[in-house]
Image (cartoon, rainbow, N blue to C red):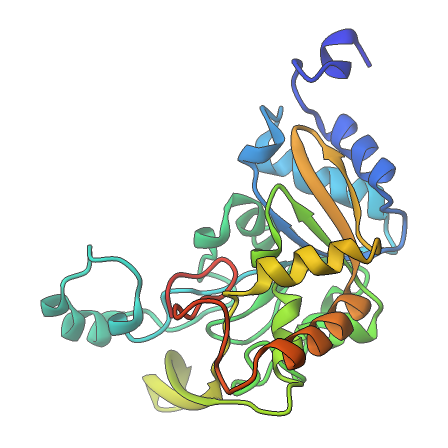
Length: 284
């Protein structure tokens, strides 16, 4: 490692990022749910491919790398974020939106690192048409195998499988508002508010909008939740490249979130903001 790399002015490489990840506490055989910002790392030689390779080098053949791979636009356009889609377009969008295909539907809205994982040779993706995950590694097939339509981020989703596997979470240059695992805790609250949803899928009869009943989820208070979790000193904080990185245990984080949310949300759907948000997603 030369002086430029030590003082942070040199390029980040897969080797330097792997070194930083090991220093953070990752090791061979870990199963990791990654939330990330490529820009936060500084200039990376090889871009997102080098980042993914760094994780795979650290995790080794027995480890598994998992990312959210949400198809954020596979829902009614009336619920899309932003004014750039006028209401007059909605009927045509409803008629022509392509159905979810785990091989083809991109997740670029969540960032280039998740999209790189999704496209990686041998990657597996869960079958949910809106809130899928993608994985590379030894446990990829098992972790991605079940993802029920009505369990977007619940008990029959990869999040619960990751919890059972004792997975770890890495927040790489992003905050706790992007910590998808906290949503699993929402499913375990004493109350749940149903929400009607629909997505485009390929059915035996062809392309169709498929309705289902999910759960109203809200990440509006996740930043405050995460700050309190960090105060318990169970979160490891360090630097990976130029990014501030956090490493935490997924089962413990979900358990803490469940108690925290049950204590602070006193009525169904109540949170710190009126906007319903999910990590990596627009306004719901």
